Image 1: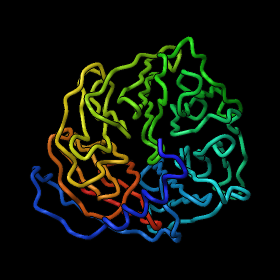
Image 2: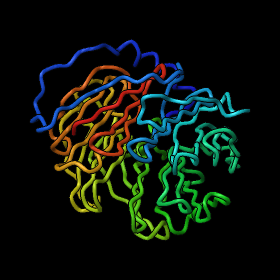
Image 3: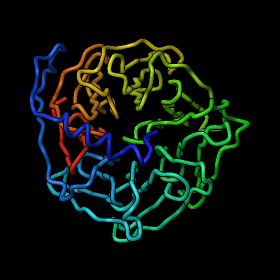
Length: 345
């Protein structure tokens, strides 16, 4: 979790650290030519959420009630503010198609909310407001148009997971009886929209970052859950390229990655991050011939072709989230409206 009161100081330190440059790499280069293009977002907001629908349609979100959308692969971006939500921080976004997207705001009490648009952002409807004064929402993800999850910080010694099965018309908290008990202060990282991931067949994984690193997982659409320990100090992000092979990323500057080949039951630590403050978010690039992870944090953007055993730095700007549609369409977003597109993986 990242509380609202922490955001300005985190952002300030990250901006001071940001600088251009590409050091020598220690990972093998792919056979194809990689490109990195900085795109014009039209906003100075801190961008935190990112959701590609395909190579052409992408949604993004951030502070100040900001949302963005492109339908031409990032050549142009439409940006706007949800009316009445100018004080909210949209830490996650889930794009369904070019017209439909969900926004998740993170904050204490009723500043954690869920909005939806069905008309490409022309109008937004408030679908759910956190009713618990101790609640704080972190991430969201959908299996399909009708079924999705939201993870929040634990409340009353139980993980706070919301679920919908009717396309978001109704959201309900999962009962504590089907969830592993929470430890005091348990929460996920609300600063990239990548602490929760779903996969076909009802599988989902949730990275719990504090006070201990754990991974919640389900294989039956949330009807039952297991918990696995992660050999890291803190984790912020989780990504799986199939049902067995996954990676978790964290903010510890000495050890920020671990990978699994058995669905999350056992983990192997990877290399230290290539820049301070570790990773805020990262993903496996979809459709590559060999596994490639792209990850970012306040210290920069990097990629790995060996499940985090080594990293190649792309640049040292400030990033908060990364998402992938294909080897030709990977986006990263961050401070001051920054959006870059990577291809050639």
